[in-house]
Length: 97
Picture 1 (cartoon, rainbow, N blue to C red):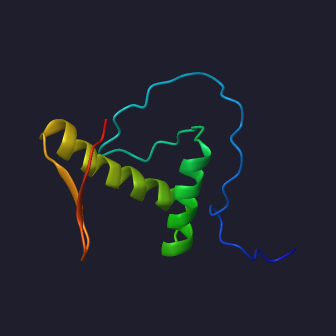
Picture 2 (cartoon, helix red, strand yellow):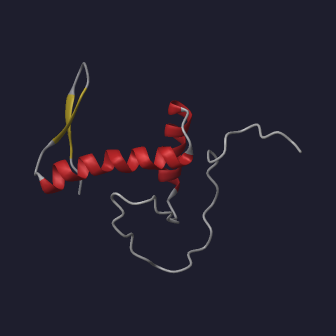
């Protein structure tokens, strides 16, 4: 038996064709729910950056980016907050449509 040289769940492969459309159920407080989604190349690149920089699995990269997105969504869409990105030299406003 050959030894595995790459950690499991870190390779991003092309998505399988969609089977049927389903809604994601609210699963707070329950076991994780497995979902199958197709993503665009930009999303694949974003996931790969998190995997490479943080040394995490694909699953963890998805969780992190969704978590970050939820924070931004709630702040801007539910609380009406402005999103500002501040560096040492500039501050810029980000508008999320």
